[in-house]
Length: 372
Image (cartoon, rainbow, N blue to C red; front, side, top):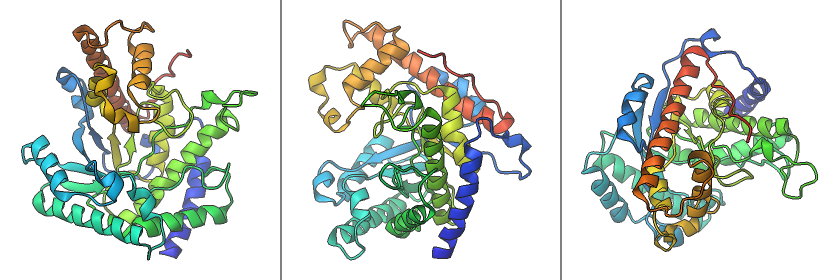
């Protein structure tokens, strides 16, 4: 495994260099013929937009959340999770299923192999995965966000500039943390969301991202190449389908929940992952839930307390700016406001799916979004 990781690291360096080019060669120009991308999406709020994505040939994937108590216990309540899947699917889940168990599981997996927390996390996650596969063998099962490489591989250093020895150690640690879990998954899905907006580099501003706009994008692309490259190694021939998001996600410095420029989305999430050998993409938006949250009174959203920079107020600000002409609604529960959001977000999601397929098929990059 160590030798394989060293080979991966060497390849990742070459890929990082090509990822920094502003206009990589179109897929059609590549000498190696590849299978069509597996293109997945979770939500399309307006069902009438299904006709708009037909040519992109996407499939639906479904996220399965951990039970509330597991955030404290570090142990999944299998009965609760299985009942949730049964209730939401009528006992017939879709083909592509993803178990989203993050807190405290990500942190526990990274601990010493002999620690009780690590052993507890592995045992709980494996038993849940095995139970799901046994109960619903017609579906393909995976865990969200594994492997999980840190975005900043060293203090103040990203994957495009950190020393080789540090990056190699990070790859080895991440592999050791999750290899036993991914060995039993049917597919692998690392998270490669955009969390640092290069426009947030503002000289003299204490809240600014360090570096330059170019270095911010280079670090993000290099991290995604490392994520997908390691996932491909650990997948051992199984599909590697990273989760991507067309909205600025929490965890960094960005205009959270706002639309990402379609051009930057393709260049900074899709292109690096394809260069590292991704089998496809799972588009995550949770948009039906987002619309439900913003159109209900604030007191009815207790779950939002856990969504730092991604809660009700953040999404309301983003929707106002991106879809409501900058005018904050007097009443977010107005059915007309809800319908506007359903139509606008569905259109954006459909365009995103079509943009991915257009890049794959013909190397077409969408135009840059007008500057605010």
